[in-house]
Length: 164
Image 1: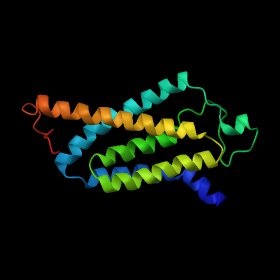
Image 2 (image 1 turned 60 degrees about the vertical axis):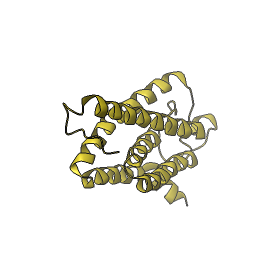
Image 3 (image 1 turned 120 degrees about the vertical axis):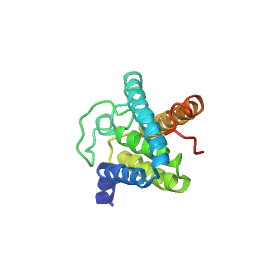
Image 4 (image 1 turned 180 degrees about the horizontal axis):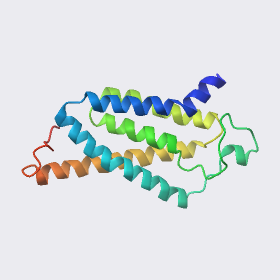
């Protein structure tokens, strides 16, 4: 069980990123462009909001607070938000905007990453929940900004067709 936790906490995020990239590659040209716009907006927003939240929310890592050994090596810095969870939750929410089924599947894997990081004693639950909240917020912003661009500039940007 420990080796599964370590894999989920330290390697599963790579699988999710690759799955998101494969999903992107397999989209039609029109959907790929819209998805890219959403990703180019959501990923930086999620990153910046995560950094900002880190400045205002203090969450010492469990292995520091409880003086225990984590399952994976980590520096004893602020644990909020979980960057691994933030990345994969953003990817899963982005995929969800194009494919509900695959988005949910990747979302379950993303939550599994967060749970594993809690079980590995490198994050608290609040770090994971905060990451998911930031990710969903960033993707919602990107979704509506792209919709606005599609409405306002469809005549000037024909490659940004409204497909939903």
